[in-house]
Image (cartoon, rainbow, N blue to C red; front, side):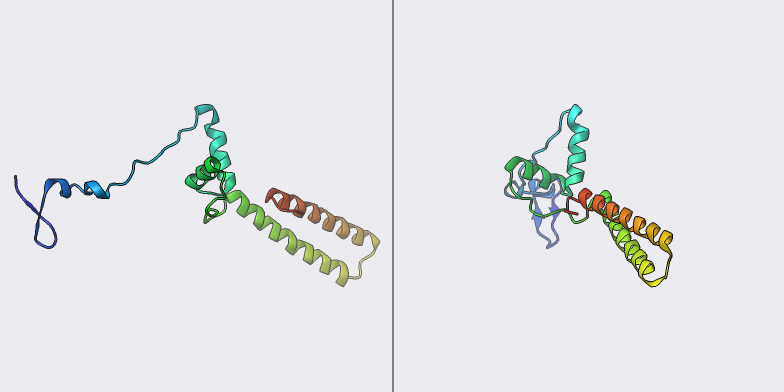
Length: 133
């Protein structure tokens, strides 16, 4: 058997050359495989939580607060937040139109209806994000 040399020029044995030594080995990972019937629901709950898979399982098992929310919000939450910001901008623009332009009664009523609809959409967006309207 040919000896192998470490960076410093010293010889290394076969036990060390394959990576980790006995004392530096990590514990075996704990894995969870949900039943086939519940797999889709499990992944949907993880996605809705905004947590990593590991944080979600830890929170579920130990009923602790999650360490932190995921770095990125799920796509649905980002989209709802964007729509919420758009409704606020539209509401402001409609409010400016209603106040600045001398409109007759019919146009004022249409603008007021549009603003009311935007308030309803805003309330739905806030509700979808889990916040109070």
